[in-house]
Image (cartoon, rainbow, N blue to C red; front, side, top):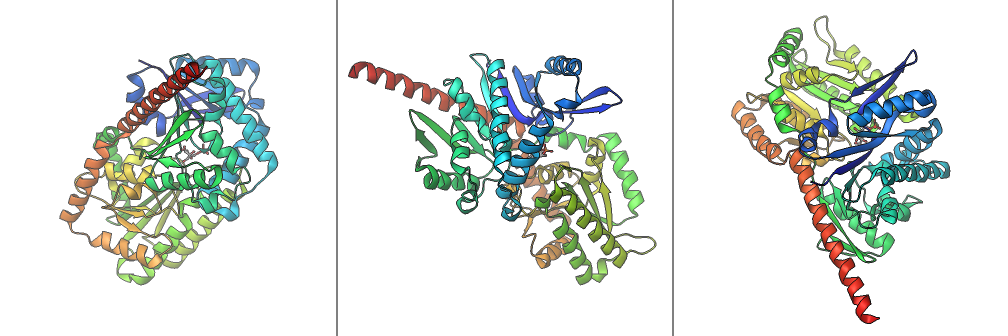
Length: 483
Ligand code: F6P
């Protein structure tokens, strides 16, 4: 079986350094864990940044980390402080991230960011080329590495290369704002297969290819030189079995029961996000305030648990949003709290898996209202963890997952009236309606789970590669005859 070489900006590990000792914890969530059963069934290598700047590590520590990670099938790319500053915080998260999420006023177009983005993508390409074996399959992930497919293709023309974008791909009128729009498209087009979460993103990508590179597609395939690139939709799933089964584990049930007794019969609305302006946290608090204003009968009866996990705290826009979130929570609690009740319980920390499952289990409503989100797996996790027919999902129409979770109460997060009425509706929803909608969504999430997603992607990638090998052979044969 062919080995898969996964490449992402971050490795699925957390590195920390305290008093000259480096700690490595292998992350319990996300893509890596989700794909664990898929990886167990085949050889794999994961290449990515260790998450710590190289200046903080001695040479011995770097070698030590390298050895420990290699035992786990990982290969770290070390990045300097300057590279992290300009490539990760800079171009990836101050240019591409805001722009691809339609926050064009926040996007910065700095030549120095771009220069380092190119350099770091090249550094990743060198690492891949050094590690690759002839039979490998390359699978590159996300917006931090848009140039990598072409950089690898240049050196290894026959290797299967897949690229998957985990965030939205914007419409042409937004994408065209990028001074380096052509270079980025050319970088992506080095892949044999480019995957997006939804068909909208695919069609916006086609618009950009047409308008910027003059390339047309035919049935989702684009001819570039003597290669074909397939562009397709792969809505990323979750590890359904793990979330479904964990929700009924005794310690999760115990934790949920404890939390519920502390909440004293209040109906629970749950919101879980990284701290990010794209997640609509401020609008969510304001919508909840609107709901309490409009529905005094629910005061003292519902609580919003607002879990916010720290993220990208080296960026000014992230620091300032934290301040606004905290002011809004304070103001709302100040307005409506009583001795026995606070409308919002704000938890600024990263929850462990058991706590997260317990929260999902106890929540009557999952309030997932990003302003823009590539997919949003929290929505899928919440639905999957809801059992006993408990739980209603309120979901933003601007999350990629809205395309699959049509049974959720879908809202425009900027429309406070609509969000408020969805909360009221969810609180009054008859039990059989809840059960029915959950059942349909469960079936879908179980069928297209993360393993299915990965297998589907790899299968398509290999078939496009075969097609490309055929084109190469017939072109060479044609040239031979023409000689
Ligand atoms: O959604 C894009 C993404 O890069 C995810 O892959 C990741 O979990 C999240 O954003 C946080 O990213 P980071 O902390 O690495 O910037």
